[in-house]
Amino acid sequence: MTDPKQKDKEIENDRKRRRDYPLYVFIKEAVRFFYPKTTLEGSSRIPAHDAVIVGNHSQMNAPIIFELYSPVKRYTWCIGEMMELKEVPSYAFQDFWSGKPAWNRWFFKALSYVIAPLAVVVFNNADTIPVYHDTRIVNTIRETMSRLQEGADIVIFPEEHTPYNRIVNGFQDKFVDVGRFYYRKTRKKLAFVPAYVCPAFKRVYIGTPVRFDPDIPIEEERKRICLYIQEEITRMAQSLPPHKVVPYTNMSKKDYPLSRDPEKTDTKQ
Image (tube, rainbow, N blue to C red; front, side, top):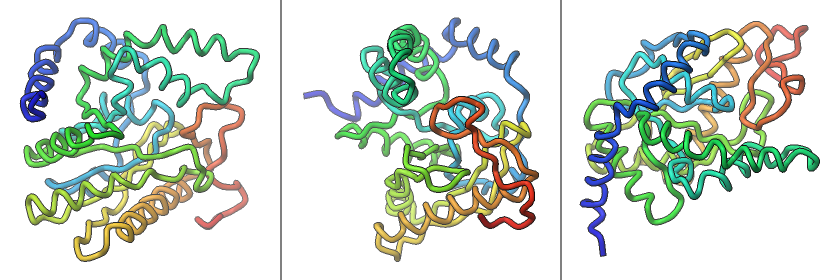
């Protein structure tokens, strides 16, 4: 049986060798050329160390923005299936396009195979940490701890397909466990930093962090931190002029929700 630590080392060495892979560099610079320049507002709220930035996914906008324009050194959690050639098509279709009308699903199924090689190149060469939902999650946690201790931030987009409100979907809450593992390892309380990704204004708005509390049972802490971040993202979005929100779920632009009703002046829905 392969030693997990040795396997981690091999993966990391392989990723280092491919960091300057020409096709990835070409794709990244092409995206940078065409994608609007986006800035982070309130980046001073991000602690200098021990920080996890948690934001809305905004379809593919959030991963692109943080890869291209993040002012801080960071590694983004990326679903492991999007980094494996054989697994990309089924995951991509199910997650991105399964809600498409029956008459054109064949096109998106074919597209999921077309994008697979490019997805593998991009996600394996970008500053990412593969995330798994099986026993390989230990590798995810181990690399996350290592990156945090190096002084890098971690970026996570934990939305799932269940709506929370018109701004953000519900969160998969197990990412909060990173705070528990980090406290056990370092005795430091990790900061979870809310981020609202807003393509309409070409901005990412950074909110007030919340610290992990090791004295609260983990089930309660997951709920507390997720609720705080969802509400902070909502508050930031609704404090801005009314605008179209790019949702997690892939849908027609005409169906994008408004951040708030134009006639409303408060931040409550």
